[in-house]
Image (cartoon, rainbow, N blue to C red; front, side, top):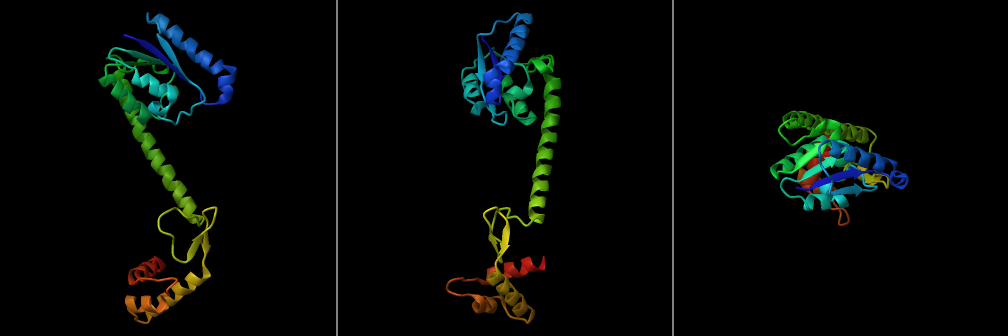
Length: 220
């Protein structure tokens, strides 16, 4: 059995002054001593964002690759090791299946053993679901705000507009005039194909299906 510590700081200033890393390492050493363990190695992740998954960080990848059954990982805080509750849930479950122990000091210790593990997985799963819902909410709010401000959100370019360098939709007067003509012809009973033939040019061909989309967009 090997015991590994894992600590991380996200900014260069924290790396340079060493205080955050030193404090984390001392926490692990104190905990290991109380548990009768001796750390074989401490993996130090310097200036790496917590938003990166553990196995995509240089030291995290090395740690995961070298694990064997009955090994133990010590980490001072859940957010030092994982980017989210959902990430923690997935990785902790994988470690448990590999028979690797995970001790998170801010959660009371061993979260993959028989003691606190059931409570840990229940709580973290609940937070993961909450996190997922909040992320979806935030994305929806941002898209709504962007749409209301007239910004391009991806997908097909709306006919009648050009996309500016900052993502803003800029009216194209030529295309807008064509839209007015298409709508007027349709209101006078012209077929989609007749409208398409009338407004198409060699430089700007428009199919009858494109005409239909333009009319539908205008009616929305």
